Length: 137
Ligand SMILES: Cc1cc2nc3c(=O)[nH]c(=O)nc-3n(C[C@H](O)[C@H](O)[C@H](O)COP(=O)(O)OP(=O)(O)OC[C@H]3O[C@@H](n4cnc5c(N)ncnc54)[C@H](O)[C@@H]3O)c2cc1C
Image 1 (cartoon, helix red, strand yellow):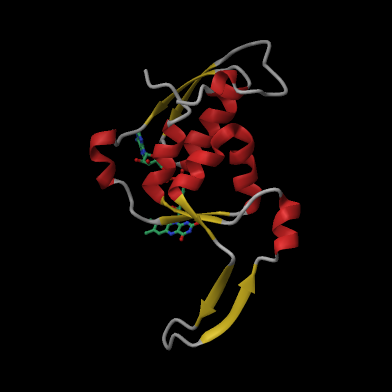
Image 2: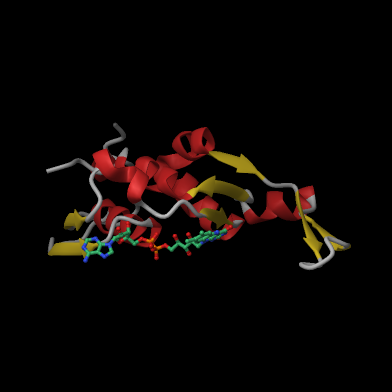
């Protein structure tokens, strides 16, 4: 388990506050990690435990470079890579006929400049990945 509280960070709060985050989706976990990194105390309440992760929504989630670069910076790069695929382009198709309307290519040079990567992953995997850096109660 990555110890997020001791992961290198630039600023620490002088006044640690107790936070309660309701919901362990990507928003709640990102919020919790950001607060822990600067020294606050955080408890995340998630209604679905590990045993019923299958009840969570089975959607996908798109992590564009401006998001992935922050998660990489927080030390989650290995964990994210293990549960995601990197996207080089997206194709836009017409819904009713499937006709290809166009392709949006992520140019290498632009992706490099963003400092992140275009990642796609399965929604429950973001929970597993975020859990890896938060110590359970
Ligand atoms: C079928 C589907 C397909 C999708 N496809 C894509 C896609 O291709 N690309 C993309 O970028 N996005 C996609 N999305 C959207 C993406 O999944 C969401 O935008 C993202 O997950 C939102 O994150 P969140 O943390 O705000 O909310 P959520 O992921 O919904 O997390 C909220 C969490 O709060 C918990 N919770 C709720 N109420 C309580 C409570 N009272 N007490 C405790 N816990 C509680 C829930 O169990 C859940 O774990 C898809 C979504 C679905 C459903």
